[in-house]
Length: 110
Image (cartoon, rainbow, N blue to C red; front, top):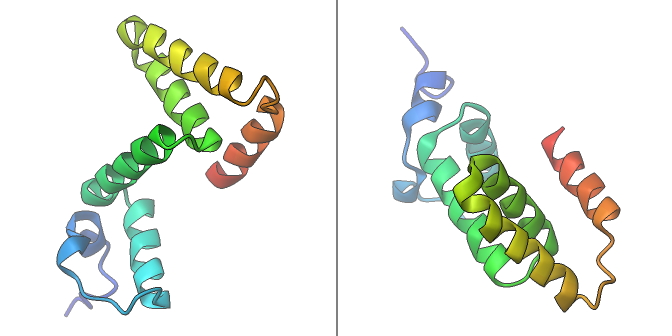
C-alpha cells in the first residue's frame, strides 16, 4: 500500500488553501516547500500573486524578478518591464544597487 503522506502525486496537486495549519508551523513550511519543488500549480499561482503584490508595494527584489519575467515574456511586455525597472531605479534616487539585488535573487534560486 502506498503511503499517501509521502506520495509526490499528492504534493503535485493539493490545493493548500483547504489545509489547516498552526500559524508559522514547521509542517506548513515543509508542505509548501515540497509542493514548490514538485511545481504544484496552486502554490506557483499563489507565489506569483505574492510577487506581484510585493512589486506593487515597491520591494526591489520583487520588482527585479517581475521585470525580468516580463521581459522574457516577449516584446509586448518588454516596455512595461522597462518602465517598471526604470521607475524603481528613479524612486530610489538612483541608489539601487542592482548587482547586490541580483546576487540576493540568485541565492534564492540555487
